Length: 238
Length: 257
Image (cartoon, rainbow over all chains, first blue to last red):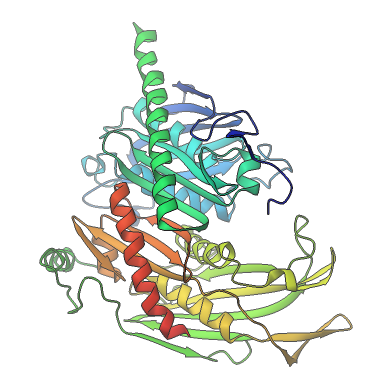
């Protein structure tokens, strides 16, 4: 509950951002050697790396789909990414985020091209300051592209939220902790298809409209950053 | 899923595209819902929900434990879900997988975000002892839409629950203290197939939808959202889905109250 902490003053947030500003971003493609594709993404103090393996044969065999491949995600917070050391390995929260990440990424990959196969996406959060699932997905999306997986577009993610009764874009840690609503989304910024949507907090439809609008704008900016990082790999290889 | 044939999927899809459903329902109709309470005698509150052929039993137990360090004077809510091997040929024994974890966490958020439970009244000794409310969702038969069935079962079981007594470090289960929930969060899952929206997808329909959104409403406020499955939704589609879910949860509220 926010009682005395002031998260918003004269339209400025605790880190000086306006209500529609994203944190500063950094993206890098092809950071690992062994993985088929890899990526790094940072928004403010939240950073994550992702590695992609496949398409490769799916085991156990009974999980194979005869007509299409599947995409599997692991989302994990490293033990040192949070204030108090976290027990290693995905928590209940991590398992759930893994699942919704599969839902977010599967629709942009041409999975029907790879019957019986799996594409495995591994996401590790290096530092957590809110928005970890979004940052991890942003890294995963460029890692998929880096792996040469045929895709219909890029998935770009960011969260909107509500602090002191005001809808804002891209919450950072303190805002998430003391804020009223957290609304992470992921979308194909080209088509406007929202493929991840979660929300907790109390709100109504008008406010949702406003927050979704903010988040959609944010995702488009994220997409520019991702594209820029991907283009850079081609320039480098010239 | 192994037990659904392509012919079934195609038939369900064709029906929906023509505005009907295989079991004769309209697109925006729930299957028959039956809720029984007091089904687990040892539980402080329990409910069995039959939603079409899906069956879920929810039990509420109270216990005493250590509070979380960031809320030393508040009780604890724990929600757990078991998708045991009895409920489907595709479920296996073992620790909760991704599906069970998602199920329990979505129900948990629905209850937590609207502060349905008076957790701040459940402190016994600050920083030392608080009541723990443990909500266990046990799926008996899986024919789709476990999310809405479990949410109904959880809130009904909590509504029915009493709080045991506590004296000399002992939980006295033969004493019944009043326990009152403050809000009634209700979940409604909306699936999308092309330009059609369906309510309460059954097992076959869950396989063929482009995507689903589980929307949890209290009487006035939206308190939790979870997009499920692979597809995507445009912003305007989502706003329509929230409205539709509000209308349907208002209907369901009558069954609970």
